[in-house]
Length: 425
Image (cartoon, rainbow, N blue to C red; front, side):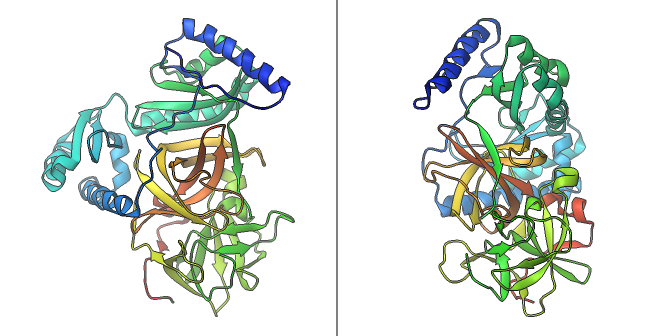
């Protein structure tokens, strides 16, 4: 049965638009499998509050899993060629690894992780690998203009490893034929593409701890020059490359034009590089040229005047994992990973942002993020995971996107090192 969530409020024009969409969805429900089209965004199981202790405890198990997989396969990301990974909390916490491809290495993973994590890990058959799902996602996003010319307006496309599918959020759909083109373009069947029709869905990049910090870390604000009115963003973490020190933030906060960057109102360095406009990768670097500033692994989480957390490791996102971010505007908020690779069109610039993680706000946070939070550190326990890229919302849900710190050497080379030192330098 097709699900529909009533949307209240708004003008008569908006109500007419929604009424037309209801009629369309009813027609779709007659001809299309229920699993193919859904009239509401998935709310996940995030209505309850999530404690910091739970997030940290789960991250310990996740890092044990990632380190063991990396030891056997050479890197954690290599498991994406074999299947998928997600968290199942239906009966306590469990890491579920699905294998489509099996060999002597997967047999070793099963044996050694089974011994290491016991009932905290389960192994199941998988219909797809992560890379197969990701390829379908890319095919759809690459044909976005063609699809929209037929009346299907796409908000985002993301890999859902837990459900073994690709989620396509659509704000408008002209007719059934235009929806069917999604499976034709991607050469995938309706069983792998899950369409969510949500006319309220909007994605937006976000500009907006307001003080000068001699020790630089994650979660503090900085001022940059390209934008006249929206020119505040947040730091994610610090790093080194060769002999240089860097602040890492969202790429859309920078231009790569060597302009002066301030933190908060004192010069800290220069706008070094951004891949946002050229590649759709929302990661950028600030070259720390002020000799009076030191870099650290500290995080400005909940405190009023100074850092109160830190990361000591870096890892990869896992589907259904709880994570948190700390930004200039909304501060410390948490959510649950829904999609492990998402592409979406930024409504402000029109640029397609690629390969970010979609995080849905947990029940204790109305807004996952707002303007000024862009570039925020995203982490769990003491493990660094991502750089906050953008936010979005609909009638009943708030979400954020984060670029992956596991991709840093791919973007900036093998000499790029995330700073994990507790001693500022």
